[in-house]
Length: 173
Image 1 (cartoon, one colour):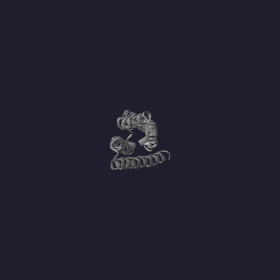
Image 2 (cartoon, helix red, strand yellow):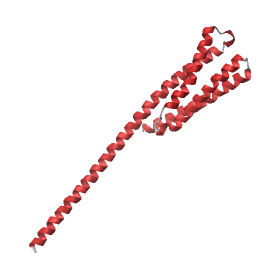
Image 3 (tube, helix red, strand yellow):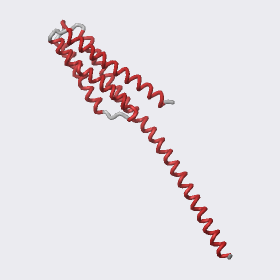
Image 4 (cartoon, one colour):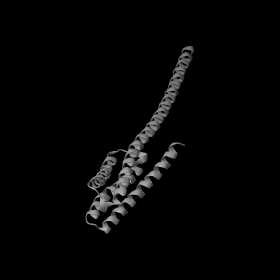
């Protein structure tokens, strides 16, 4: 009988230790999952920051090109060769920005923002050839179409900016 009690106590202690070991393992796994989620959150925030930096650079060059074209378009009938070259160069920048932005891989949370940016940049890109044709042919209808494309593109960029601000506010809470 003593042997049975000793064996039962031994088995009980083994099961007890095994249970503690399982509990430790569960705690360790839970801790590791928490650390992984924290790393993902930090990684996502870093990813969002990197993406935002790239888009900010594209946005800056977009604004510069649009401003340059606007300033030069006002006096297009009196352009010097240099001014025409600057106007066309700014158009080339606008055309290239869509391709640059399209190559970016946005974080999942920024996918909708990225689509709006691409739509805006695509409209700016389209406006370049329409403007060129309108100025070359002295065609007011094409100039109006180009202006409309730029306005629609600007609306998409504003929507993307608003959505980015909302996402940023949520992340900073």
